[in-house]
Length: 151
Image 1 (cartoon, one colour):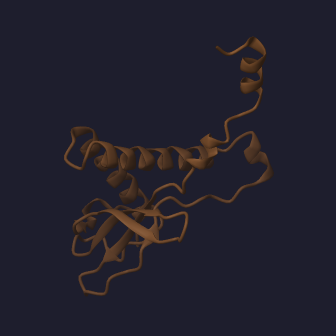
Image 2 (tube, rainbow, N blue to C red):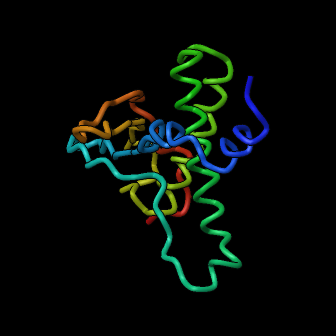
């Protein structure tokens, strides 16, 4: 039975085993699949914004980036724990796809918006030990019909 002093000591000193579980976060990427057949390179959907000194107090872009990464991590967890066919995973996939479509338009990655070009989405995890990339999910060909504002 633990004594009050041993309980206090355990509360003051953290368990370092907690930090052994930290891994690189999953990464969401997209690429263009133009009608011409030349496949584009994979681009990161979530891109960190430049940081200034005032972002310590007011950082809406950083908050949006954190929310997007949290959404991707939740989808990854649902893929691993529940499977791709689960309702929760399908809902998260829909949200992540919308996030990627927004990034596609925002970063002007689409060559045209007439629906002929397409794009692809993938979720990767990088192995901490050797840096090997594991593809967790790769979508089929998605049309650029929802992309707005690119030129």
